Image (cartoon, rainbow, N blue to C red; front, side):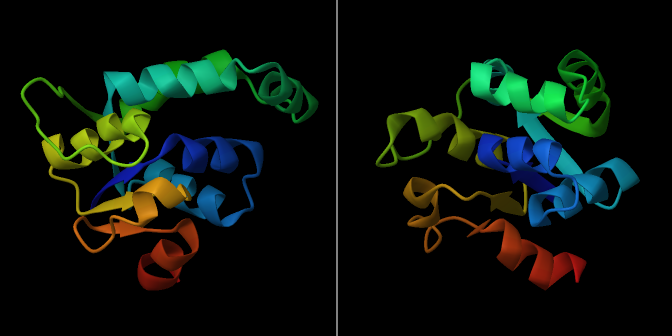
Length: 137
C-alpha cells in the first residue's frame, strides 16, 4: 500500500520510535508500506529536522539526522509534482502534501495536521492512530 506521511508524522516517528507514528515508519522500513515522497516534502522534512529544538531532541536520543535523510530515499517512491493540480487547502504550505498524494497515486495520506484532516471527505486522509487501527493492528 502506498502512503504519504506528512512531515509531522515522520518527525514524530523518528523522535519516538515506539509511538503510533513510529509503528507506521517501522512498517515502511519492513516493506509493509510504500512511502511516497516528493522533493518539496523532503525539503520540508530537512528544514524541520534542522530546527534547534528538534536537533536537540535528535542528539539527546542519539539519532543521526544525516544518516536518516541519506537512507530515507531508498525506502521511498519519489514523485515529481510538476503539473499536479490540487485545490488550495486552508494552509497553502500544505498544498505540496496533497500534490504528493495525488502525483504518487497513494492510497492514504497520514497526518496530524488539522488543516489537512478537514479535507478527509475529499481525499483519503487519516490520523496516525486511525491508520494504525485500520491497517496495522
